[in-house]
Image (cartoon, rainbow, N blue to C red; front, side):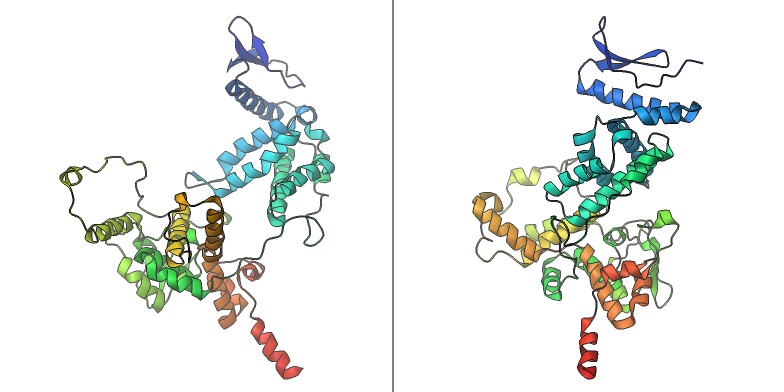
Length: 421
C-alpha cells in the first residue's frame, strides 16, 4: 500500500511535456497546460477528491488533513458535495446558487488560509465584506450561516477540526438597529389596487394563475406545475396535489384545496391531455401573435407570407412556465397596467440615463412579484379564520412561519382598546 503523505502535494511543471502535474500516492496525474486556469482548476479538483478518499481510508489521517487543508480546498470539496446534494428531480435547486454566493467572498479574501487558522475574527472579516457590498442584514446573516454549514460539513468529513467550528458558532448574528448595515422593509401583501389593473391587461392564463394564488395561497412553483391529472375534481371541493413542492424532502405532504371560486377560475383551462401542464406559455404566445395579425393595418408581403418558421428557434416557449418566466410575465403586465405618465411613449433603449432612472423608480413602485400573493392569502385567512387555519391552508409546519406571511390584523386591537380604554 502506497504511503500517504501528511502534506498537500504541490502543483508542479513537467518540463519534457510542458504540462502541469501532481503526484498523489506515488502516481503522477497530468492536469493540462502548466499555468492555465483549466489546469489549476483540475488541480483543485483532484486534490479535493484525494483528501476525501484519504480521510475516509487512512486511520488517523483525518486530523493531519484537517491541519493542512486550506479554505480553497474545503470550499471546492463542499461545492462538489452541494452539486450532488441540492438537486430535485434532476435539476439543481436555488440553494446551490445561494451557497455559491456565500462562498465567493470567503475564497476571495481567505482562500489560501489554513482552515485550522480560520477563526471568529476571520469570519467577521468576511461578513464585513458582505456589509460593504451593501447586502441587507438578513441576507448577510443567512450567508454567514451557510458558511458555518460549510465548516460543519468539513468537520463531518474530517477536513476541519471541531474546535474551528465551535469558534465560528460564537459569532452572533447582526441585530436590527445595533449595526451599520442596510435594512429592508418586510414583505407586504400586494394591494388590490395594484392587482386588479394587472388582471385587466394580462393574458387569461396569467390572470388565472394570479387569482388562484390569491385565493389558495399556493406558491408560484406550485401553480406553474399544475396538471389536470394532479387535480381531483370528483367531490364538491377539488384538491390539487403538486407533483413536487418545496418541503417534500422533509417527507411532508402538500394538498391544496380548491373551492367554488377557484374551480370557476380553473375549469376553462383544464386539458384533455391529463399529463399536459394546465398553463402553457405556447398558447399565450399563439394568442398574442393572432391578436397582432388581426390588428395589422397593412397587408402581408409575399416574402413574409412565404417565410418559414424556424425549426429550432433560440428562444422558443416551453410547455410550462417557470417561476422566473411567470414573474417576468407579471412584471410585463404591471408595466402595461401602470405606464409612466410622461415617458411611456418612448422606448426604454432610447431614453437618456436620467430618464431611465425615473422609469426604474416608477417600475419598482408599481411592480410586484407572485410570491407576495401568498401573503395576501395568509393575511385574509388569518383575519377570517385565525392563525391555525392559515397555517394549515398554507402548508406550514409551524405557526411561527405563518406569522411571517400573515400581516397582523391591528384593527381588532384598536377596536378592543376603543371599548376598554
